[in-house]
Length: 350
Image 1 (cartoon, rainbow, N blue to C red):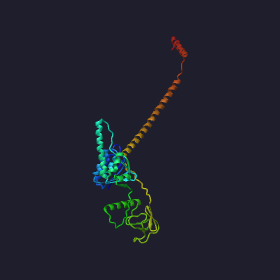
Image 2 (tube, rainbow, N blue to C red):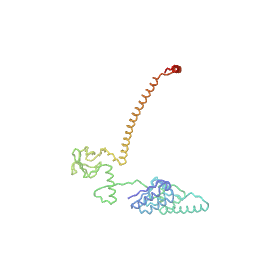
Image 3 (cartoon, helix red, strand yellow):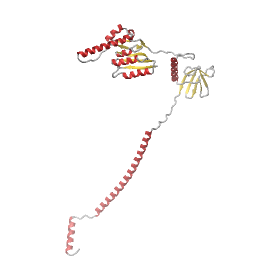
Image 4 (tube, rainbow, N blue to C red):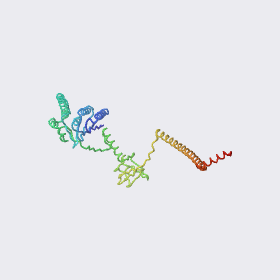
């Protein structure tokens, strides 16, 4: 079983999450993977992050295959040295260099930092050499920070070979005595073929909708499979199309020339309503009932208000009419009336 680990981008910092990579390697160790494939395309990064990943790979107990598919610069090239096999793409590149850092402080601080950098540089260089790199060839690369091509990396011993496309040919016969791994590969191959052709026939025969029976050579039906009209597999089936349900098999010269699967539309059942949906629907219905009741009450109130308004209007009209019926008395008329009343009073006439 293979486990892939991807180192794409800066190692550590805001790039590759070192903790996640270490967890993946630990899980591969727990799963007892045969091989961990480390694919690298990185400009480098932090030394301590790279060292942790390198150590985790070296102590995993798994075979390590490093595939440099782009760059393996700086600390990424250090990680690559954990590989039992280090393959680099034809257009891939490597770059090795002495350790460096940013520093500040007094003279003593800087001298101490320089000593630490020198120690770290020696350790990094020794990793390349102990892995099998040619010390004489890689020393200029290390000191000059030169970008190294795939061929130069292989020649210098920093890589073991070119990363090339995998070419595999499988031949399956009933008489093959395969190893456990070969059987697994065969099963995967057959599964892929079955999925691609979308059709596997058990017992090597079908009955077409018109009653014709087709007998196939083998258990897997695909383009090129020989087909017969008799169980003894002696008489080739006649050319034509044979329909079985939603599948049409086209036969030409006694072999399957095409397989067509009709698309069947399946009506999806509506999803079951959750308790929350049912409760919401009930709440909506209650609100609708409340709104309807409010509408009825409003209608009744409007009717009552209209009745009161009509009464008030009627009363107003009556008042106006009564007011218009009273004769208006002018000042002259009032003086004349009062004079007449006085004269009558003096004469004893009421």
